[in-house]
Image (tube, rainbow, N blue to C red):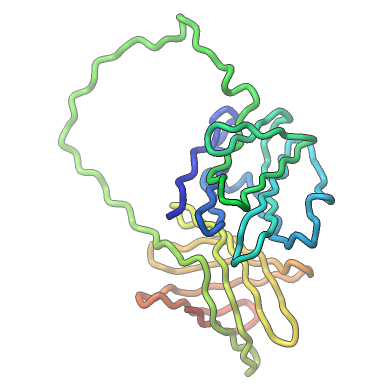
Length: 248
């Protein structure tokens, strides 16, 4: 079972993304996904850490972890809105941030959670004048709590094929993260004469309808996918290249 991620720091003006890593090395994200950008997952041979470029008010987070039996590096960019931040692992260990970049080695399974915080968050104190005055506890009333529609939890991966212009190609989809509101980050790989890889964002709704906007990782090619998740667990739909796909 994955370890629950901590909520992001309120000191940065929004709920920053927090990352959890389960026992299989799979990374999931909670918090404000609009300030986080998934850059990609790379093999160690790519030596991504040597080419990281820092930017003002942006934290580059590189997580080394297990994926499908191999050790890989996954890179994220987080819009912090300020220069001074700190990164905390497992809720207690502070990791140094150097030139807006931080490297976390979670490949041995010892790190389960990563959180970005304001650099001065722990030094914040409350003066006597700021202590809130106790207020009477209101008497609860018998009100009905609305039942929110449930968002299905997708599997971490799906495989199948896509058909386009009469040709059938193998297709694999990996779900990198899914929020409680159904927001998704995913990767799609098409195999044929060559391999095409796409990084995708999108959502799945309470009616099990899925939409993804995908960008080719190696070329300026965009692809839109829409489909439905069925009760038996398979997905199928169409894409903007006039293709149809079927995954289980």
